[in-house]
Length: 84
Image 1: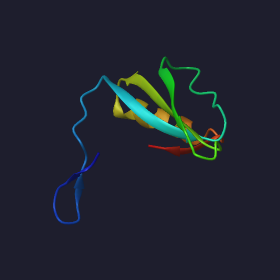
Image 2: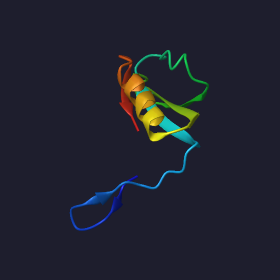
Image 3: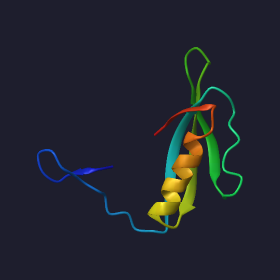
């Protein structure tokens, strides 16, 4: 979450590492996720048509660099359509 610094400027949030970070992913197939990391993974809900399923993915991250690396890994998984 970004905080408003001024009218048009956003300030980065102050995140204390290590911390538990959660992602919500929306996918059109059961993704194979992050084999190199320990994480908790649970189904959240399915779209009305059944085409998409959302999942909660939580894990400990030790730095902003690690958090961004994980985000980039998730972005590269073709079945993941959105990451929140």
